Length: 130
Image (cartoon, rainbow, N blue to C red; front, side):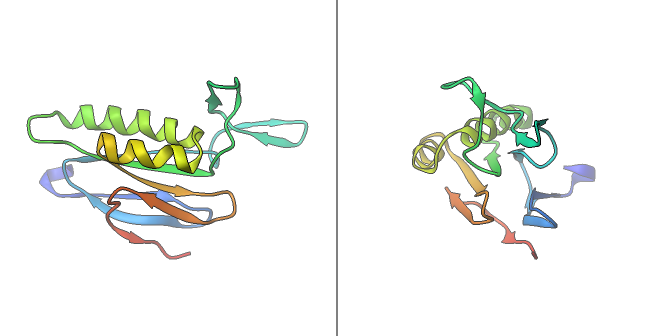
């Protein structure tokens, strides 16, 4: 919270923020393929490796995870959880992402390769302008 105010946050889209929200006692982490990655023989490969196969992940284009810091928990702990879950959900298929969101109390916003967004858990905020 910069200067005691809510912090603006957003999930990246191809040309503009996909989703906009205000963060208060919460952390937002994103795993995506638009900023990092490898170009191998003209083919873009993810910098995130799927541990099940040892190959670059390709399930989604962007995975944004929001974790609220419960009372008594440090904001940094929420940030660590958001970072870990954003990487995990970036690798997993949709059906495998939805149960952990509910069980572990995080909200998830995913942008598929074709541009289709979907959420799991109560993801706050509003959709950004395309």
